[in-house]
Length: 207
Image 1 (cartoon, rainbow, N blue to C red):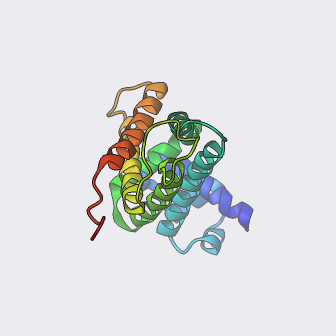
Image 2: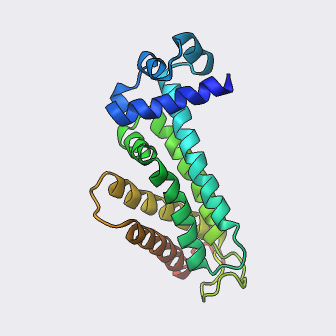
């Protein structure tokens, strides 16, 4: 069953690449996978459920790549950020349809976009763990002071939104840049957001 489910997800990505989100249907995906619709409904309630599952699989791959990069010890934050962004982007570049799928889901809205919102929240938590200096630590190698929890969360959400916006624009060819330029721009933007948030006053202090 797991193998058939994976085959259907692969087929859905192939159909999307050829026909866009509007081309996705149980019949079309099953034809591409060489499976009957019985097996489709064995794994998915409807096409929206399959689309959400494909979204989840893709974002899980990106998140896992970022986690692997962030596990590298003793890297200064700028280098750690660039490495994490580079690894996450490599997932999308290895199969460009994955990146275009993420961008299309974001633009389409609806129930599947709600799943993307959840995935963004999960990615923000990972970014917060990677970049938010809660206590002075040798890994920081900079003068950024520790961030209060509220500031750290706000910075993580803003950083993920900004980075995904740049990546979406690049994948849709609205933004002209090389891969290395994109990595530099996105990692620099994320770091700038955290640095700026560290300088923001904490209005709850002493309240």
